Length: 302
Ligand SMILES: NC(=O)c1ccc[n+]([C@@H]2O[C@H](COP(=O)([O-])OP(=O)(O)OC[C@H]3O[C@@H](n4cnc5c(N)ncnc54)[C@H](OP(=O)(O)O)[C@@H]3O)[C@@H](O)[C@H]2O)c1
Image (cartoon, rainbow, N blue to C red; front, top):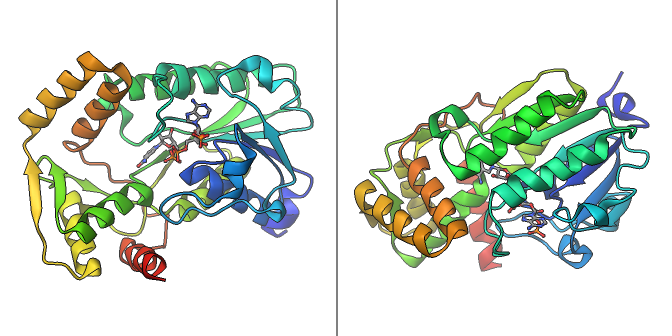
């Protein structure tokens, strides 16, 4: 049986469809033979390309677009009609809605779980984070892991995907390298396995079909943040100029920001803490960071 035969008749809801991972997930589920419903708060945004190479969702990429506000459960009535699998990559990365990780990363996903009750949904695939136990006290981790524990007690069959850093964040490094200087939080010697959104989406589709409860996913290269930055300079054709923001200073700045604004403070705290720990996952992706940087550079100079 082919993968497409296996997925025949399966209907998936993709939440977070306008995001970096979500866009690739919509396309990968469709390519694998699923009937796909994309949840978005803006169909216009879905139809435009996302940052760092993430694709626009064309009409042929999905079967149905459900426009709703995931943070407002009453706008989701009927969302699970006919659906057997839910995939969610909803969470805050660069959003400026003034909402907290608790309100989005936890509660919005909780709203989806609640809508599964009494529906045809049997399986839930949720994108959390790698190494949550190393950064368990952060607001983002607490929110993600509450979703994980709610799924465990939901009665649904579920898979938690735990990825290493995304290529979307690496795109920020390339942008800095093009401008001539990369800022690193900490010495940049922590190791990780960055992964392309399309490779990660492939892992997510496999997770939807499989029975693993947890799946860790990294790209093909294990590298340090410093090596990723040097690669960005190499591809950009610029002499490497790194500025290290010492951890003590970054932590002080994050605490200061948190006093002024909880959302930005929590995000800053996450960026600082992530600069301290390793996040190495099994090599599930095949697209290299070098190829990705080259592709982004080619696109920006076209
Ligand atoms: N970046 C990494 O390296 C990394 C590593 C491991 C895990 N993760 C996790 O992976 C998940 C997906 O990351 P990503 O980079 O794909 O994020 P992203 O590009 O920001 O996409 C997040 C999605 O969530 C939606 N969303 C956010 N705030 C919302 C709100 N207030 N109301 C409605 N929808 C909202 C976004 O909708 P809009 O487009 O309408 O804002 C978007 O569809 C996140 O939970 C993140 O924590 C990230």
